[in-house]
Image 1 (tube, rainbow, N blue to C red):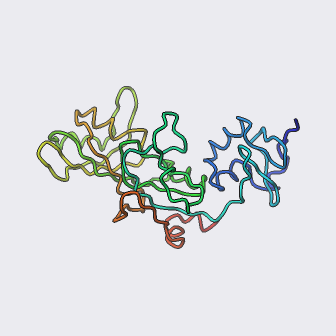
Image 2 (image 1 turned 90 degrees about the vertical axis):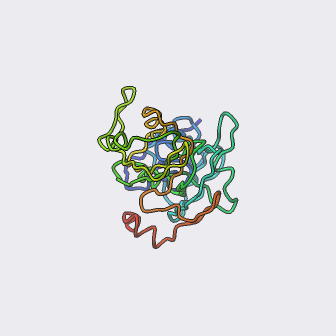
Amino acid sequence: MSEQKPAANPERGERIAKYLARAGIASRRDAEQLIAAGKVRMNNQDVTHPAVFVTEGDLVVVDGKAVSSPERTRLWRYHKPDGLVTTHKDPEGRSTVFEKLPESLPRVISVGRLDLTSEGLLLLTNDGSLSRQLELPATGWLRRYRVRVHGGVDPAKLVRLADGIRIDGEQFGPIEASVDSRQRANTWLSVSLREGKNREIRRVMDHLLLPVTRLIRVAYGPFQLGNLTRGAVEEVNGKILREQIPFLAKK
C-alpha cells in the first residue's frame, strides 16, 4: 500500500491537520490522532505524517468519506440543556449535543465542553482551529456561570478563591465568586473564571462543602446566552464575529 510522504516545501499548501480542523472534522490535535490511526487518505494514498500539505484540487478522505473544502469560519451560540454529553459519540450510549442539533447545520465542533448535568451557553464552530484558539487560557476570555449550591455560603470562603486553590495536588487558577441570592436551603452564586478545567466549578464547590445542584454558563468571552431558549441555536453575525475575534479578519 502506498504512503503519502511529507512535503518538503511547506509553502506548497496547508498542513493537513490544519486543513481538517478548518473543515470542521476535528481539532488540529484530534486530526493528528486520526492521521496516526490510519484514517486519513489524500489522493488515494495513506497519510502517515502530519507534515503533508493540501493544495487546491487534492482529494482528502477521512474514514472513507470525502472532506469538503473548508468554508468561511462560522460560529453559533447554542443553549445546551442538561442531560446531553458534549461529544460526537458516547461509548455509554448517552444522548449527545450533536445528535440534537438541527440537520441544517454543517458539521460543527464545540468550543470547550459542558458536562452532562451542566447547561447554558455552548459555542459551536465549523473551524477546528478557531475552537482550539478560543479554548486556550492564553486567549484570556472570561467564562461566567450561575451556580446553585445546597446550603448557606460563607462569603469569606468565596473571596479566598480569587487567589486560586489547590485540591488533591491540582492547582486551580483564580475564581471570582459572589452570592446572588438565597432560596430556602439553596444559594445562587455568580462564578467567573478564565481557565475552566474539567468539572472545575463542581470540584471547587465540593471542596468547600457546597454541592452544586445546578450550573448554567451564561457567557463565554464576549458571547452571551441572553434570551436564547433551551435547545436553540443561533449563528453569530459575521461582522460581529470579526469584531470580537480580530485575527479572523486576517485569515
